[in-house]
Length: 407
Image (cartoon, rainbow, N blue to C red; front, side):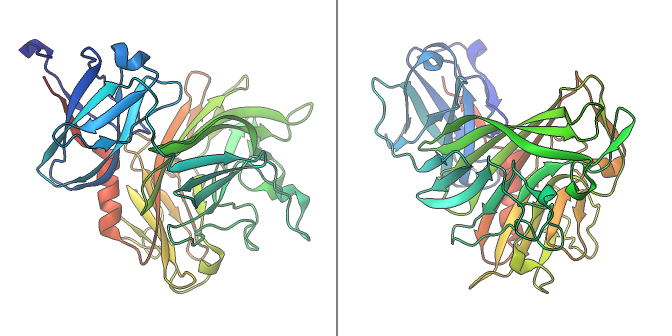
């Protein structure tokens, strides 16, 4: 396994949500040295692109080179890329991993399961529910206008302690649903289309199809397709955007950690203009118990709260509030590669909801040759807001550990 100096490379290993770096396949195995850098690597998802025999292998085996301890590894569906979680790597230290072709399928427990019952997709870590995605249309509660029926969103989102930190059909804003993604003030074909506020009957976002669902020892994930429709198009409702979501939950006990990658593609014959506006985009509606509760608030990486943080540009936002026995929180991280990152955030002055809102900085278009890709990472935990944890997770997301291919 000796190589010349010309064949030595230094790489940066991206988190699994972003893709990986090329891995040089040397025969049937490859060594990687992962460096923690200036901060502890507590539990960091990383991935590497595979080539040669590793790319073609049906099964992979990963171990720590020094101790020989086996490390769970998993391939991304449909890609020549391996993902694992670097754990307990102190700042300033490095660890070498050996990735090899396995002769048979490793006997590894699927710690993260994705269950599809036809109506919902539920992902669990070690049996504990993390999130539920609604494929089937959830009817509006009794007494509410049927226009509020909804599919294509995540609720409930839960903490490791089992607390629910999202809401669905809240009385004050029944169009808000856990995690959802919609634009408010848009122009399409000369008409204003509001995909967010269903009561206006201008637009809607709904689940279209489920493309894949995967369980495994390192992550569980699903890919779904949503449709954004103009309800007042000539001849009846017409699709404007199709949006793919890839949701990936990692085998990390606490905090729960998952990635969301969105890609919005135009399927109409003219572009969609997203106008300057004060809210819209990737939104989170907090738990019902948080509504008008004095302990409910937001905290950003700038130290801002709902009192002074509206429309500030934040790397991360902590939404937090009371729970059954202790507080609970959701940490939302926006990737530095997103449109206009760090994106402005809408922090509502009363309601427990916020959204990443790039249109605050001015209009933009989604055109046939300009799909909009957005990436976010989320974490849930029990207890009060933890700025130190949020900053560590942000650094892991934005500047993942360095990886050196070992000679």
